[in-house]
Image 1 (cartoon, one colour):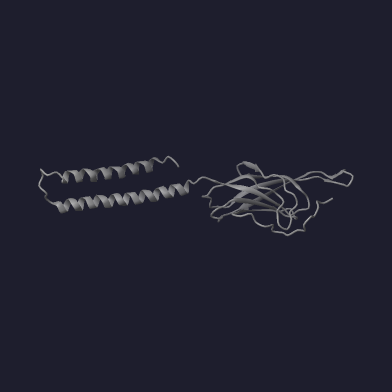
Image 2: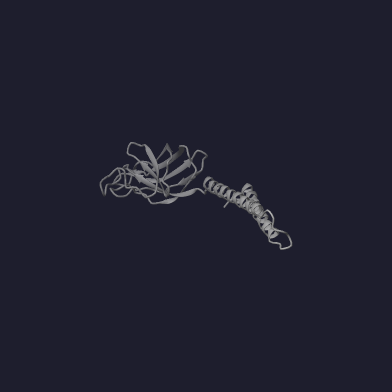
Length: 207
């Protein structure tokens, strides 16, 4: 997966040890030479084989460690949950470096659904071991009266949230929950969660 010169060099060492064993075996098989100290040769071959086995084991462990430490980030589907009384026309998730991604619009939640659809993607580093701060920006839809006159314009909001490990072993979703009091929470999950607040079916946006 990654070019790792140190590990390649270690592989050459294994190949070198294997070639050395092969050459020793050929010399011991020549009929023109008396077979002396045969048991010593066997011990020598055994010693090389054991050392080769140890090197192989150590390199396998090193490869596994590097693969884990340099695993590719995981893409998480963004899902919004809107417990407020206003439609959210858009929201974004932005990290501390200013990298952002949109989460789409979110209708009002129901007892069984958060109101939004999955969009792509928040990238999660598999090696993250500390809390991560993210900025959530969202915009509420305008409110019109029955005649169509706008009585409350679109309203933009912002909040900082923190997510922290441990995360699921097989993370798939990044959930953003918008609460009636204005605060926001987020969670990394394997499956889509049911709404945290059960609100009436068919409720309508505020007027």
